[in-house]
Length: 401
Image 1 (cartoon, rainbow, N blue to C red):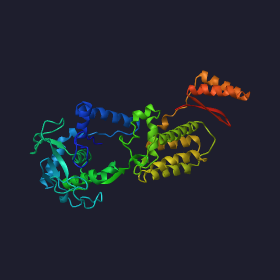
Image 2 (image 1 turned 60 degrees about the vertical axis):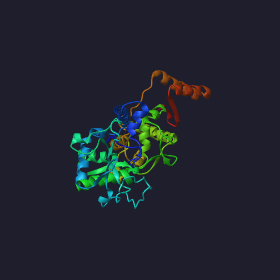
Image 3 (image 1 turned 120 degrees about the vertical axis):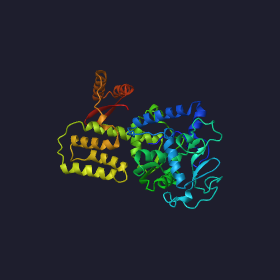
Image 4 (image 1 turned 45 degrees about the horizontal axis):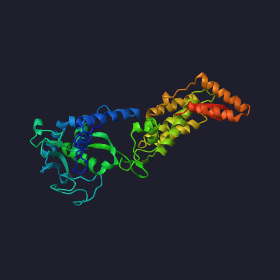
């Protein structure tokens, strides 16, 4: 997973200020302090969400040599030109430019002003520092055997250089947001394939946006929360994970505290069902059904990662009358190795003698038709985070999540 800690401007079209430099000025910190601070939060959140960490987190600021080496190759092959503010990639030299994102003919001014660009789709590989010394993060190419001005890499360049270093010149899967299709990923393909002469990536998996009331979620429009903020609102991280599993990666997911509340209810119901499976029953399992459910689960996750259908299959399995509780539990825990909902960590909770005694007192009050006293005891238990549920088979309790 590439970490862009330098060179990503506030506009994707090589305009504006470096995002890290801007944040450093705003918060009165060094660029390194800013990136380290948010990178730590990011990694902590990944762990909270049960997301497997990548083997490598290459930072752009630590791979300047690789990026300059890539520029040198592109320059030698005739894919670059120099302007007063940087070194640019000439998209007219790459015959398939635009094929990936299906972009048609663009006119100057439609996306960004031309300035010294030869083509509207050309993009910066190396931005010059004008004048040098004002930025916190700038680099001297001469240190790496390149004869061009002091500056910093372009965002598109970073991703190609770091990806190819750790995954090779050609690899299988590249992911990213759908907003990167037209510019960023198109540019990655152009510069990588121009440099190597090989196909860059086999499969592109583009995630759709997290939305709020149908619009892309953002701080400026509201409706955006950090994982820590959600925790303070009594939404554990795995509740958000459960919500994400209800929509495929390539379809928008509308987020709100209401939708999160619904996910919380579903996730807690699932955990309660798992607890029920830990009790023995006399049902005989039909062996063929075990195989059928495993096959169905694999079919669903292999169908472009159709996780919502895979999650729905678990609910179908819970209703299955021809599989006993033990076998259901084993199947679900196997499936959860993909879903990552920590269903293997659910334990039968115990209550202390005081709570047990209050539950007995309430049952006695109900038996004697003293419903006022029964309600008072229920309220007292609720203050102790114990929720009671009256069923045909007797009272059941659970801890408030």
